Length: 324
View 1 (cartoon, helix red, strand yellow):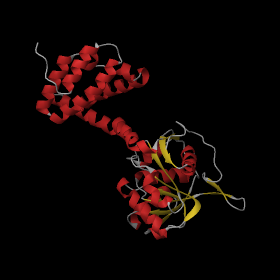
View 2 (cartoon, rainbow, N blue to C red):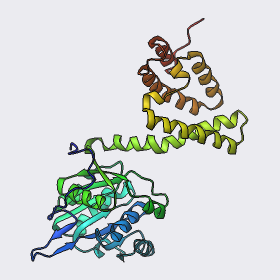
View 3 (cartoon, rainbow, N blue to C red):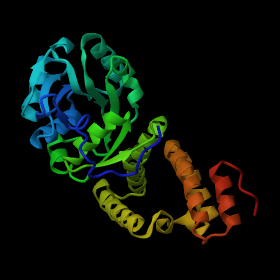
View 4 (cartoon, rainbow, N blue to C red):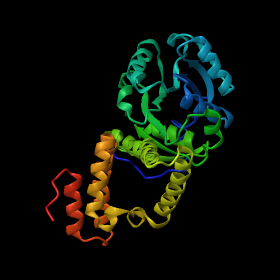
């Protein structure tokens, strides 16, 4: 599915499929949200939606009734249930379990529950597409997914800082209409993504967050190896990272690149690779892979010559250094 637009911040409410559902008698009521798997992300979204009056929270199902009750207490609304058959006919259902349980959960819900004509079911995975909910689509539900591009390590902090968060959406049109409304009403920004490339989309988040942390870890280990104590190493790295990130968003990615590859210093790159390989081969491998990307960027800087950069590329790929 191709994205319909890049960013949606204030989509119009669709009376049929949006947050407010038009009843036959002309009364407009808030849709009911049931939740399966109210972990950190799920209960954070639920609390935000409850506080904003976006959804009425219905049943909450976790692995144990105690866990379900704890989630309800955090959300401030809802009814803890012990089994899927404790959930009423589906209106809007959020499946916010771990990724490995989403498809199995969808199949279980499809066997046990009936859906209203305009029911919407979505999950919160960053990697999996809404296709994992196809069992529910087969019983008449509209399916989609919403992935807030944000850390939910501490739910209370996530609630305080959610405003302005980008949320990636994909799925069928009625589900996206519903989710766009829901995201906008708690201060988020919607990004529609291509369902077929959702794994690659999520890899972008992994690079920008998880692997950034791993790269900083590698840098700190290198400083420690040189004799700098951990506390001071972290202070040095904080200055480097803060300055680099500032340059990236002020100057752009390519102009922000500095260092031996940017300058075309092949011998420095090769010597660093050799010493890293002797000390920590896994860090040497990361240096190699990241270095190839840096070479591509350096070509666009018009600093080092193309021949210098191609020599560095060959070093990074493992070719032997020419004599001399």
